[in-house]
Amino acid sequence: MRVICAPSATDVVYCGIAVDAGTRDELPDENGLAHFCEHLTFKGTHRRRSWHILNRMESVGGDLNAYTGKEETIYYTAFLKEHFARAVDLLADIVLGSTYPQTEMNKEVEVVIDEIESYNDSPSELIFDDFENLIFCGHPLGRNILGEAGCLRGFHSEDIQRFARRLYRPDRMVFFVYGRIEPAHACREITKALKRVASSLPEGHPFQTLLQTDASPARPDRNDAGRTAVPEYRPQTVTLHKDTHQAHVMIGARAYSARDPRHLSLYLLNNILGGPGMNSRLNLSLREKHGLVYTVESVMTTYTDTGLWSVYFGCDPHDVTRCRRLVLKELRRLAEAPLAPHALEAAKRQIKGQIGISYDNFENVALAMGKTFLHYDRARDLNRLYQKIDGLTAEDLHAVAQELFRPENLTFLIYR
Image (cartoon, rainbow, N blue to C red; front, side, top):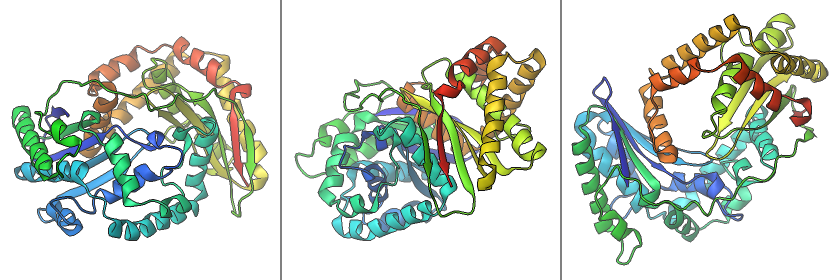
């Protein structure tokens, strides 16, 4: 298991295990299993019952949490640094030593189904999943992370165990530590924790040998052969009839992976177009000038081998056509001519400020560190990122806008 450590400025430590397993790794009959596995990981190990897991960090004022993504699942905890050994031992135990008891599954499935039903009641969230499914043409990357109630009720403990043995392997994981912990000390404690897990596993468990090796920053051989490539992109226009007061609309296209150098140009373009600032072009047009929407935003998502960008807005059903024209007008403006020098510099200044503020959230920094090292074997370097942003030219952004913002390249999804 690889380890990455970085110092922080407080006595609070954030650490976790990033697993190279997400929704895209599910087999056709495993829809929702990655997320369900995350839930069940807290429900019992060979050494602990669910209550002991729940109480272990809470009893010292810490926090234990997890999330499932399309390409990774991350388990993490925050605590005062004197409890480092306790946190490391617990994380290793739940991620690598879980038993996924059937009795707990029978209870937890109803919790997840309630989560699904709550999500389905929010069209402004649900439309993002439906749109991603269109963009990736039925590929597992487009699946809803939560899965479907019918599939979930059909899963058994053996299904989760097979999923975990296939994907929750130490050689597909990164243990990340963000805090005032010496790297050598961190590796020693992590190694001890892994060996304790190994000794708790049943005889013949396939992870026993892997867990006997020391934690190391070296990268082992990885096998991503199980991940299928995304199919060729086909733009579509889809209208779904929903019983909602508002219309919800998404416009977008397939885009670049995080490894593609053009993704940084799109990152800046996306922020200009519909980023979080109230001065984004779409907000100034659709909301401030025309008063047609309350929410309009553009979103960019990168994966290891592909990506997407999209525009979302909600409006009165009678205003869909007008809003759509205004969005296309802003896309056309960016595609027709490069940004003026002063506009480019202002955009760079804004996005660097936003990034800097986001780095003031230590939990976000820790999670980003774990995810980035898991997928790309590097830690995020803020100064290096600023340098890359400063190096972007108006021509870089213009070339991306011309490629992606063409009307014939766009997919449209409308709830009305």
